[in-house]
Amino acid sequence: MTQPGTMTPMTQQMQDCVNACMAAHTMCEETMSSCMHKGGQAQMQIMRALMDCSETTRMCADMMMRRSPMSGDMCAMCAKACDMCAEACMAMPDDPQMMRCAEACRRAAEMCRAMAGAGKM
Image (cartoon, rainbow, N blue to C red):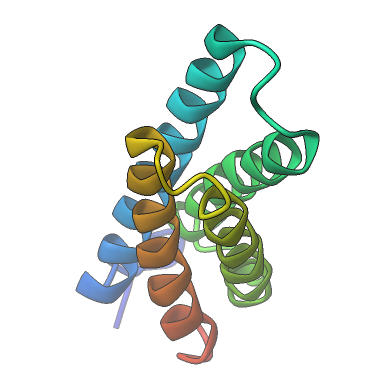
């Protein structure tokens, strides 16, 4: 039984999901920077997906770390944003940065789906 005012320790599944979200967030930020340096090659759809995924993964990780009662719902939304970003990145299969980003997003989506299905966090 936990003391009043103390938080339950994070499960390994939660910690793995937080780590995957933060890795995807970092990769999306790096990929946006890479796209901006390349100039007009980056399509707006890809940039929007990168921005949405970056923000969503950061927020999702934050909510899990503070044990928000809404984190399950956030994980479900995060999985969707990550899936959309991975798919958008796949539109540029010859770009190694895009492929690394797609892989990080796929992993975060998988972890978030598992957390969303885990019920109470």
